[in-house]
Length: 349
Image (cartoon, rainbow, N blue to C red):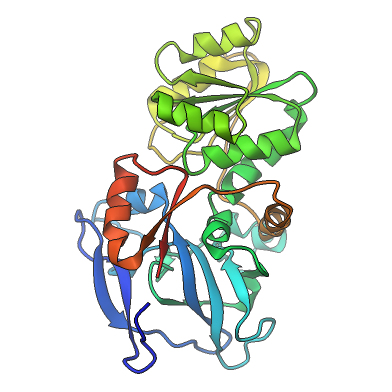
């Protein structure tokens, strides 16, 4: 890494022009204000949500421009702003990315991701972690990781937290002899497979496109794999004696996967729509299995992130990573866009 201590500038990957790809630029190194914490970034995970952010039209764009991307940060505490407490310089941490108001009913219950006044996040409203340094609004949003590898720990903040929260919501359906379907075994889905194996006795069926991705799903613990196509739901029913799966988790979120999810779930089962692909699942008394539960799931709580850190320390889950130096961050985004990443892409400044 370049020595930036004298120049007071740093490299950052920023979304600067509507409709264009991000750029690697030189910007002023931030300084922490009162109560804030400056992190030296050790790893920053990439997410398809970044692609969604860069696809929004200019009219009504919800975030400031330009903006440094990256909402899966790991780092080391570099400096504390005036009055900041709870961490020490040199602490290794990851960042809980859901920054709510802290006072509404949702935040008071710990669900800052559902803040009634509007959540912001690094890389999704504030300058993020795809840089050499970033500022965190409060030490309350930092989670110590001890000696965990920051490259693998960074994506616990989303790639693990999002499926973990989604699975916890439907655990009552996943009793002995049950089946769970994971649609999309990529950045989030490959962690979902591991979590399902750790948390339940359910048979896990993974759907994806191409033998390489299906083999990856089996490596992560899927009992069965099915090509994600127009026949996938029928194949799931064959594997479940004709009744369908108790739970279907859609980590893609396009119309086609929504239709597959609704066709693969059994009567009284549950579908969780997690992927931000812009599609939907058709729900109605005569358009879906009777008494089916259909819900969305957004990110997760800080308490859940603490639980995941504990699981990672015990080796119960691991995030497969493909690393890039910050000088190749734009290639990382291209690989993510083209579906050429095994697990999670992580930029290491």
